[in-house]
Image 1 (cartoon, rainbow, N blue to C red):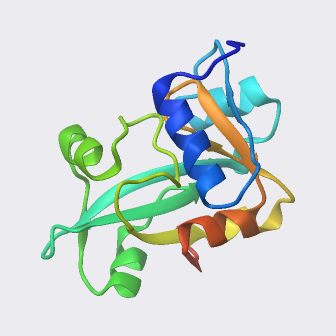
Image 2: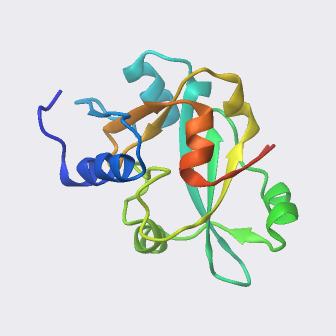
Length: 159
């Protein structure tokens, strides 16, 4: 593991500190881009992997962050019920513009603006989960309760 963090991972580390958390960002040499790769690299089950997925409101064009458990797929109709509008999948440029990060390393914290966030209820069953930290190789460990507090997210069934 590198001794210093990449600039994107450091941005997440700084955001955690600014929020008052002492969680540590770890960068691996292996990719943690997919939930399965992350679980294999970390040595946890795929359900403990936090996927930060960006959608956009079809009418408002506002970003929506859905924080899902690794194996789960987002049911867009459920999100619509909670959000009040349909969501669509944005392109990579939209994601980077609204998060500051590339797909595959989007953290749930350290975003440039507050984004409406929904947290997968399935994550709440674990004592610890792992989230991306700005790059496809960086992660940090946290509790589901910390995740909800950090993101000011609404816990819902997402699939």
